[in-house]
Image: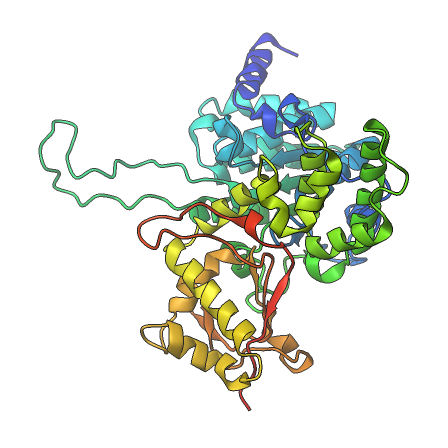
Length: 489
């Protein structure tokens, strides 16, 4: 390779978010699927990578994998990445993480360059063409994501496609946690200029996380629609509004493969049971506990508490396994019995506190949204016999300042990873449902059917004004809760 091209490749490497790649050192402690668990979902995704949905013309190259917070998306994507790498079909990965110290993992700035860097290593011919593209377009790293994708990925793929003996490329690009991508700010939001005087122009509103997430989605759609693009793209995220709208088949049913909802398509109870059995046996051996410790009924109680959320099971095991002063028997009793929490020195569910606090903060008014959730919860738990009180219209009248407004969507729309609202198509099949326009999505008003399923019995102890108070997940049993909002007759 000419010296100039080597220099350009070095420039590309300097703009790579190394920690976002699936096997990076930063991800050494990242969750992976317990052996023999999540097998069905991994098999389905791997088969789709190899064969798609069986379509012969205009293959659909993007698939959305979604599920509520804690359902195991990152673990599945990590294990699937390893499987694809072993099978020689892993083209590139990018794992976003809001908590990372690396801005490259938190923002969009290194997204395309990190994908291009991995593609350059995936096949030498592609690497050669990417080097040529960088050499020809020396300012490409200062361009927007669409231009970077065209120059660094699509252009080289088109050049290879023109070769009579070009390689038949195939493989997967796996992207996880795109909902955790935070916005890059380009404009000064202050009202004064650089000289300290009042600016003549109004301040620019800050970019939102959703805008940058949508930009990445649009860039990937643009790439996948190009005939020279041979890869299949898996995007894993929570079911936040920007993703629900982007992948909505009612808006455009053609470009995407059918979504995979981990909560709807797979019952994780058997996998969680196996995970707990294996991990509790390991802890029993480590601490020389009696063979009778953690009998099947205790494991089933933990599975029920998990409510199909792997993060609960993993958090419990981590809590039992981190060398507390109390013996594992007392710690496990504390997890199962909320009255025992005061007898131990630490919070068994601290990790869940942090996760759910982070999600709740995404609401435009977190304390108010929490009060709404707790009010609906209280109405349906305290007065189960008064079905009409749970009518969607009555809930709106009770909570909204204007029953015809979209205040509910405004408050709770960002919380879909905690609050699951089934689509209208399920209305007639569910005994607990909305029918009276309780929520709206984008500019379309929906008669949303189904029950709101909350993944935790309580969410928060709110200060009531200004900001969220400390989350008190450890004060209740974290079982799933269905809040019955009954249909109007």
